Each structure stands twice: as C-alpha cells, then as structure tokens.
Image (cartoon, rainbow, N blue to C red; front, side, top):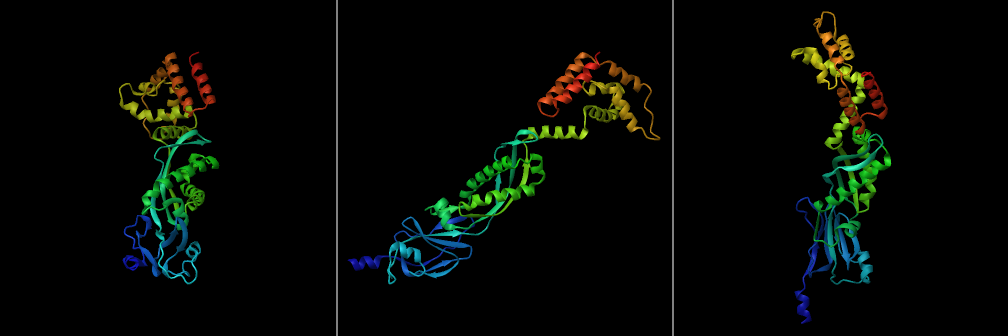
Length: 347
C-alpha cells in the first residue's frame, strides 16, 4: 500500500514561468499536492526572479539563470528544514515568480483639488498630474509587504496605492519647500525631480525602484484660475488710473461706430469716473501725423459724461472695488486711495 501511494505521488522536475501579457507582477507556481523532485530544474528568465517560501517564510531567492535544486542551491531552505548534506528526497515548497520588467506609462493625478498653503495666495486648491515608471527590485520584500500568497498580483492592483502615496508626497513637498505655486507651475521639470527624490524611499519601502517621474501639468481650479488671471492682469496694468485709460482707448473705436459717439463711453466703463483725463491720454497716444482729427463735438460730449457723475455711480464703483479687495486682487491701501479720489469728485 505504501508503495502504491508512493507511485501515485506526482513530482515536479521542471519549474518555470512564461509570462502571458504584461500586467502580472507576481505569480504563484501551481503546486497543489505536488512535490518538487530533488535535483529538479528551475529556470528563471531575464526580467524575472523566483522566491521559495517554506511554511510562510521566505527561504531562497533566485535571479535569472538555470538551477538544479539541491541542498547546495537551496542553502536557506536546507537550514530551515534541518536537512543534512545527503538529503535526496522530494520536498514541498511554494514557489513565486516575480516580473522585474520596467513598468512604463503609469499615470498619477489628483482626482480632486488638494488644499495647500501658498505664500503668495494664501490657502489655495490645486491640481496636478503626470507619469512615472518603476520596476520590482526586491521580490522578497514585495512578497512580505504587498503580494503575499495571492495566485496573481497585477500591475493595476498596485496603481491605486502608488497614486495615493504620490499625492501625499506632493502635498508634503509643497508644505516643506515654501515655493510659491507660480514658481512650481513654471518649473515643472524641477518640480518632477524634487518629487522623484521624495518618492524614491517610499517605493523602496515596498521593494520597488522608481525609475522616472514627470509632472505634466500643475493648475488651479477654474474659478481660482480666473481670479489669478485677473490679478496678473492688474499687476501688468499697474494702477487703476492706467487701467481706466486702457479701457477707454479700446472703447474709442467702438464708440465712434455707435449712436451717441464718445458720449457713450462713460456708460460702457460703468461709473464714468475720470473719462475726461482718460480720453485725453488715449487721444494723445493715438494721434499720429496724418491721422484724422476727432470731431469737435467729441470733447464737449466727454466733458458732459464726467459732469454727469452722481453719488449712485460712485457708490456702485466702490462696491465693485470692495469686491476686488475681498478676492485679494486689490490691497486695502489701494482701495482707500481710490475711495478718497472718488469721494473727492462729489465735493
């Protein structure tokens, strides 16, 4: 009976893995009740590693090559089993193969805006996305920390974890560096290098090696981007007086085409404050030798627009300016100066 049981036993004398597809990181060799024949052949291909696990403990790790499994090629397993040097019987052990190929074109990004403290804008919400590549470097550590005894562990199973680790590292990097958002957005390559340096030990913690990390875009949500664009425009213009002149100069060609001519510019600007000065400045800059002179009635019409400034117009303008202060576009000092100027026109 014992002889029949022995004959019925199935022995494995060749162990190898031919990867099918490119999405498997770890693969458990199908053992079931099979036993590995002493002297069996283990083949580990390029871009693979194999791990022998005995009773839940990593016993031996093999890199690419062909091995004859004996007590000489399984030293750690031999010690765990307390085998003597003459051991030649079949044995049981779980065998896991790991793919060490480079994993390219892995995407990361912020599914929702993250809140950071920026020294230029205060608390802001930002988005970012990019790409990275990595490979499995330490299969024993990866087995202990990530894949475990699963039959297969896929690349997609790891993406979510790595993406969350990336977002956490990015948030810390912004907080630690103190670099303004504007500078980060303008130097995405340097930002990517800093991110890679921060993430290298995070990947090593799981037996992985980060190969490359790239930041493709850093941006603010749409509503904050509009405020930023407005602030940038105001900084480029310089002050409210020059801004009014700029608007007036753009409005002159349109006003000349409409009924009422230049007299309608005041309404188009909202409050009509400083129209006379703005028209004079715009006209002086626009006049060139040979250019046609403006109709004589234009200047009295513009003067009439200035004279028509009312308390309601001033109040409306102040409310708009106060809104810009609340959004951080104007400073309190700029608002107070403009307020004094407007109130002075009512006296």
